[in-house]
Image (cartoon, rainbow, N blue to C red; front, side, top):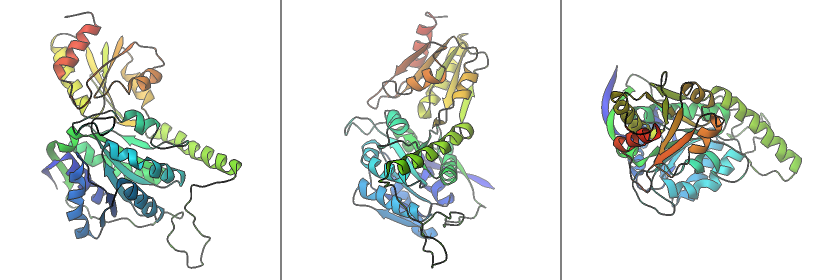
Length: 357
């Protein structure tokens, strides 16, 4: 039987990683995700795994690069400026077609910014998490339970498509405490390189060398590698989108929000419904690939769409592109670590429909 345990979001992510078979964690402390490292430093050795605090974020991501090349499930975590430091290594990992999981518990920026919750890394993670032509899987959970559940999904799809997967959380979710259910009867089995013939595990002269590499000096060879990688990305886009639709069947105004902000949007929609306003919420769970089909289905009756974020409006372009600009799209957000309130979102909904209804 699964029993409910009260856990912080960061702790739930850490425990879920172990249960997903993560054998090695390499990280460096930074607020507001340090509890992930603290939890794993105690828990990993008890289950036969490896916890290593690196001397920097750059060192940590390169340790992930090496470990992933051996076929072992491995992970790192950080927060916004720390992720920026890891981007070169993430590009190398993507260029070598290696699976791993990266957790970003976002804080305010740019620069050192602040330690309060933010969603201002959307552009970075969906557009520019390193140089070159590549994508990473991006998941945006909105509850502590979903944070835990998403970890296994991230590892599984990273392995399936041989690409990095990012769980994009924020300081609110990371520090929030909620009941979480884990299957207590499930065996904790840390990963090995089984089923990964590409892994560099030693060959004993029984096979060809497996070379982990992202350097191709011949332009035609590099182009071929990139094109084949993008063929896999098309499979990801066709098969792995995830989203939630909430009261959108008759909604004339749909609020598009992800992560913790989607919870606030749901509260605002409930208030709007009480006032006779037909509103709903579309919540993308995968930010890449973006759930294009799902948002179009959710906005089938919508006259307007409101995007709500803890940023200056970074998801707006993806919503417009997904809807092919067929519906007017407006934005409301707070940034710098300020969390929007349901009342503020409701006021924006009323403004969009022409005042109080």
